Length: 404
Image (tube, rainbow, N blue to C red; front, side):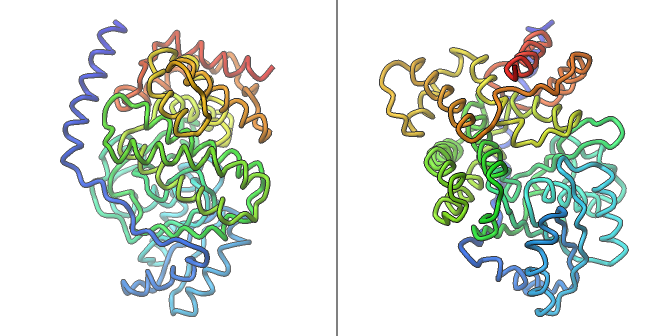
C-alpha cells in the first residue's frame, strides 16, 4: 500500500510540475532600503484607496505601526487597526479581521510584522474576495482563484518570506489543526523591506526567524521537481547570505548591512519555496504550532537538521552544493560535505541558544501529528523522501528525544 501511495504522489507531483510551468509566478513590487517605510502611504494613495485595514501583532502595533499609520493619516488615508494577531494565528482571528474590514468599509490591507500578521491578513483578504467560501473550503492549492484587495506586506522579521509567498498558514481554533491556504492571488502586491524595522528584534527572534528562512531555502533546493534555475539560484544565494550574516545580526542588532542582507535572503528563500515547495520539515513543524503553540521558526530550526539526517544518502548530492554555497570550505565526497552542512546547522543553533529538540511533544499526540503531517505533505510537497506513518512517527520521537 505504501508503494502504491508513493507512485500516486510522484505522479501527482510530476503532473503539477508540468502544469505549473504555464502559471504566472509573479513577485510583489519590491521597495527596499533604510527608510523605505516612508513610501507606504504613497502606494495606497496612488490607487485612490482612502481607508486601509492595518494588521499587526500587539508589540508591533505599539512600537512600529503608529509611525506608519501617522504618515498614512497625513496623506489623507484612514487606518483601521487590528493589533491582536497571535503567533500561529487562529481562524477566530482571521474572521475578526474580515468582519472589521467589512464593517469599516476598508479598501486595502497593510500587514506589518512577522509571518503571523501577514498570514492572518492574507486569509482575511481571501475571505473578502470569496465571501461565499469558508477558510476550510480554501485550504490546499489554488482554491481562491480571485484577485484580493490591494495588499502591502511590511516584514519586521527576516524569516517567513510571507511577503512574497502564495501561502497563508492558519490554525483551526477548535481542532488546533494548522493548515495552509495556497494560491497565486495571495502573493502581496507590494513588499516594503526596511531593515530599520528589524533593528530592535530580540536575539531569540533574530535567530529563529533566520533559521526559518534557511529551512525555506534548503527544502526548496531539495524538492525533486518544480525547481527552476531561478529557484536553485535563489536558494543557494539565500543559504550563503544566512550563513554569512545571521550570526552577525544575532550578535549586533544594529548591524544594518546584516539586517538588510537577511531581509533579502528571506525574500529569495520565500520565492524559492513558493515556486518549488517545502517538505517534511514544514509538515511536522505545523503540527507543533497547532498543538503546542510552538513558534514556527523555532520548530523549523530544531527539526531541519534532524530530518536532513533522516533523509540520508538520498539528499547528499544536493546538500553538498548547499555546503559549498555556505562557504564551509569542506573537501571530500558529497556525503562528507552533506554531513558537514548538517553539523554546522546544529552548531549554529547551539551558538544562538536554539535547543536540539522539543520536549513538549506528548506521546498521545504523535498519531495525530503523523496524520496531519502526512496529509499536508502528500501528495502536494515534492519531498525527496516520502514518509510512511512509521518513519514519520520515528522522526517525531527523535525530535522529542533530542531535547534530553
